[in-house]
Image (cartoon, rainbow, N blue to C red; front, top):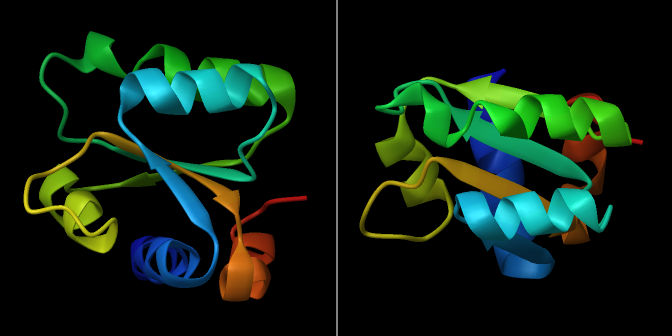
Length: 103
């Protein structure tokens, strides 16, 4: 599942639109713009991202957890890790996003 999530992020980054970082991802969820949210499990302290899955569930947005914030950052095209990414426009990743549980 993680590999598909990374692949979806990379495709959406090239052909659609992604948002990176806790604050921006939270805003995208609140405005119901996010199609899929990906959160890293190795966040310290965990309180940084604890609200994201709950908020996304409330809004009916699927969430995928991945193991590494470094790999998540790399998939998002960053040199550093990131704790959360939201796919806003799927682009060519539409099928992968659907497969991962998006509407």
